[in-house]
Length: 348
Length: 69
Image (cartoon, rainbow over all chains, first blue to last red):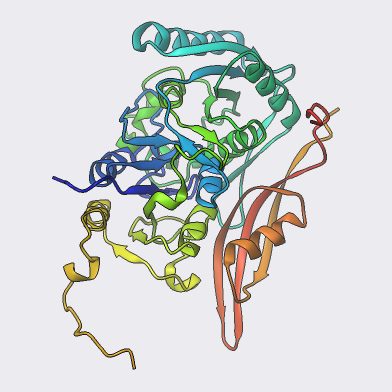
């Protein structure tokens, strides 16, 4: 058991790159829980935490939208923990009436059963027109045809008192696609993830509020070969519960003048897949000299420490990464845990 | 009529000495306000700097509803 003070740690599992751990329905959550226990303070993002109908609430875990996490790592914003957010619900006008009602009932359920403060609800003044695409590397990206409509609705919610925003956009159904079949069987990329990131990045960046997204989709037919990592998304009619629960205690994003908030200066480690070290948050941490723990977590990319010239602490699994975080927290030099242990050398 | 749009980008960037993040953000910002970016491939070349592949989404145009204050 750790006795040292918490060591704030960033956990990054990039969205839509097909990570073996974290490329599916919140399936990096067990790793996040372990790292939260090892560090005492974990800062991570929706792709790690969102398991559709499944979620985990831990006061040691700070849920920060991806672009806000990048800004935090760059030292541009601080995080201030809160007891509760008032989560406004932003619905895409492109959602059909029955599916819309399902989402409203999830919000009501979270109010009645979990005691969350949710509301008001605003519907965009036109459909958001989400489209899905893959980048040159095969990673998931995506587009939004009506970004201004998203921002108008977000501003309405902020003006009405929402302190965080859950967005639900209608995503294209493609139940017969090979990509979806591969994803459900545990071998593909989450095709929705890139467009989801674009939506939440835009809203969070423009409004300065915690934001997260859940896609609205028609239910899929039963797949008896469903991979357990994708199962969280097939338990209900919506992906919204995890977003509402996690946003309800997401930290405020505050200006640098707030000395009571958590800053990047307090962060003692960043944990990321060994082949996906080329994102803004990891690079910002590396440039600050924060130890980077590079975990063997196969994905589509091969942007490694060697390729970028970064010094990292390699870890074969998230279990090993948690051990390294615990070592850093307790002031144990990670090199002392490895063999062979080279003899000291004179500087000259 | 929306005057704000999101644009996907694919860039090749020769790595220069110094911080990578600033190099990438400068290169992406030439095309719009960076919303999301990542290095998605690195090509090591003999006797030349590494070539980085950057995939990004930028925001183009102005938001007509934005509060000017």
